[in-house]
Picture 1: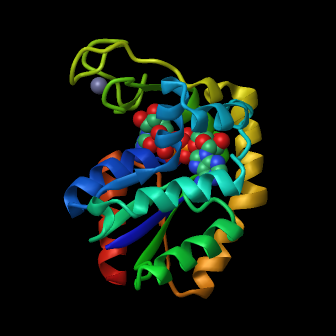
Picture 2: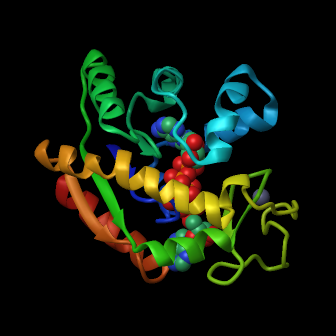
Length: 216
Ligand code: AP5
Ligand code: ZN
């Protein structure tokens, strides 16, 4: 299964990608997570990406595309993958198509997660993340057992730099302007499946699995 998750910031792409990747036994490839790991590790890639991420802008395509190409060339992605956060604009989608064609393959499905902007702002302002395992929580909707601590190893949860309200609003604008056109692009390719990303996490997962099955 080669699948892409598309949706605005806070739609629950990361949350669903984690669950679906495990259930489908394919690796989750999250460009946001890879960038954040590089920023905290102080790598050259991280230095290139940081200023764009902090502002809520897209990292330049040549940086992002090269990173994804390397990641998809790794052995564990040979049998399939779930992309979370890539592609993010039509040129990236064209690049992905070319990369997969070079590998003799193509996408199976693009799952669009739909949620309105006010819900997104609520979700992102309450999000807390684990620096150790990457698990994402919400102070109200998906709280850890101990406030401020990861359930897995008790690591202290942190709030993302780009989850301040002003930056959230900017990320939503970037989504509308640059990423939303992918919906039409993938609809034209016959790959699009759209689901409502509201309700409980488990309800969204059930809808996602049904939509993926239908495209298989
Ligand atoms: P990225 O990390 O991809 O951020 P994003 O797309 O803005 O998405 P988020 O991670 O904010 O949200 P999500 O949809 O994963 O939601 P989550 O599951 O966490 O990208 C960050 C930056 O990196 C970009 O701005 C850009 O600079 C750069 N970048 C990344 N990819 C790039 C690319 N391809 N090209 C260029 N630049 C790129 O959930 C959010 C919250 O809601 C959590 O607290 C969660 O617990 C809660 N929640 C989830 N589901 C539910 C539910 N059903 N009900 C209630 N709460 C829920
Ligand atoms: Zn953890």
